[in-house]
Image 1: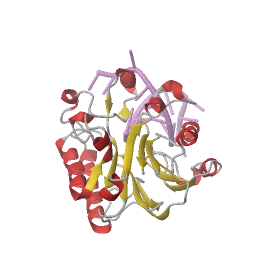
Image 2: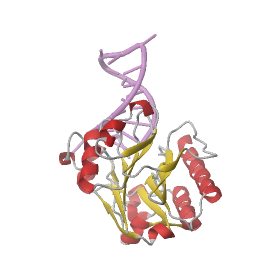
Image 3: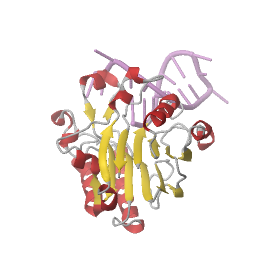
Image 4: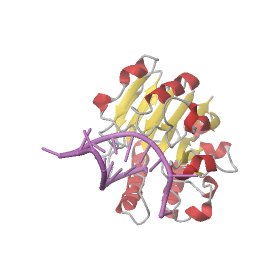
Length: 259
DNA sequence: ATGTCACTTTACAAGTGA
């Protein structure tokens, strides 16, 4: 079973590249974030034409998540109880081929001084309470998405430059540690113990070309899923300007392969 | 202090969010 997570930064702008990604990898599931479109305008037909069901939870302009899958997702839910940013479409969950999948677009936070940063921490706290209440780490569960947090300095191209800043602060990293302590495995790290691989590069300053990246897109699996995990890879080519129609997203797809 | 991108608007440039 192959599951891909990708922050597309607008599903309409990235439609051709998303269709090409599906044809290239033929994953069982593609979780997308930052679709930036109201559900009525999501390009459902283009995906069904190549064999993918779409479950969408979006809004105009901002945020938005969707699960595209070859077999239909069941028990689909939008958002979560206790969400302190319930007006923002950031979480869609469902079960595909026996795996409960949570597709997350975590609040960016802007900077550690911003009120949005406090909201980000509260949101992550509420998300953990949801897991504790409604999920069991002894069952097959996979959280994927844009977490907007680097778990540790190995995930940062220049840790000294980023130290204490948004995506790299102790407060954010504590929340990831709490998710792991509850019973999840950072499967990317398990397969890449020495660091990275980066998943996001700022559009500005030639960051991709210079290797200035962060690992902020994560796959956190309960042990029943982690033990099936054969590989976790990044499709770095997708981040290259030359690799497809139109411009790339600022994130690269994260590919999780299960036995 | 940032060599960008996508989206929106009583729009045709400028603000916002990333």
